[in-house]
Image 1: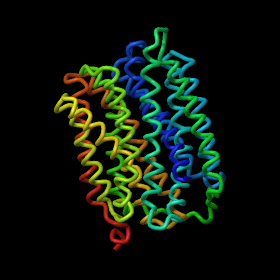
Image 2: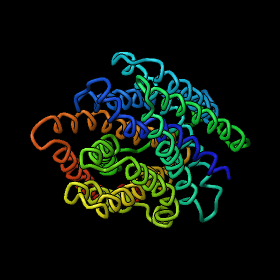
Image 3: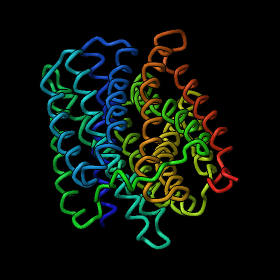
Length: 384
């Protein structure tokens, strides 16, 4: 139950704060006259804010209880999402997306540390605990899939603003549930003198693969709804697609828990990146509904497990005192990839070939990430 309550923090910091944007992008782009580059840049500044937050969190967690940091980030996300619905200018939206990224990092890194600690107390079920935490993002994705489309279809100016208000309300409710469900978890700060040095050089292939993951996956999650709209999918089909993707995220907790528990090397990340490359290419190779929905189901059931695989890699290979630094290092390269990814895909999509070409570029990056991750050995082996 504690892992599920932590999962709601991931639902807020990723599902509602970041991935709901894919559903809002088509109506906002049409209403505000954005190019693909501008639309992607909105997620780029969100990722930049996330990077700032990730850089700050190791120092913050020396002085602040991880649970308090997680909850403060969740409440801040809720307020910022509501604020999205109060503006219509690009500059204000850029600022809000950036601030939301900072708050999301506080929630996600704090929650990730709590999940890693909780996993050590769940004998034989550590992989499941991590999967439940990261899989909680699917709750936010499903909630957004059901809530956003009816609101953006309202016959009123800037109807997309109402959707942001509801997303903020959902984030507030989820954070209040997390408050209650995580009482008693050990979030004590790690004293500066007690922090272990994270030997990151032997994890270089894992870090590089995770950078490729950040670059590649975010293009899909930013533009997939727009691509499906361009291919002629109706409202009901888009809702079903995104809900299926979210359900896949939730199911990933059980699908990959055993693999994350058993393996100490980069093989899980390699397999998952390869599957993501396939899922990203599917809707370009074929617009048949079977291929499209298979893409959503496969992508959803895999992509957050890549994130979980990094926490598992840190937990298996580093001493507990070094976990904050290790988790933060992976979070930083993840954020760096996300900064470049949306704008890169948007820039490619504004040229010949459109979004289809951008998706192929993302698939290629993910495939390269799979190759890099396959070279990552368990730390004990790497040190030898």
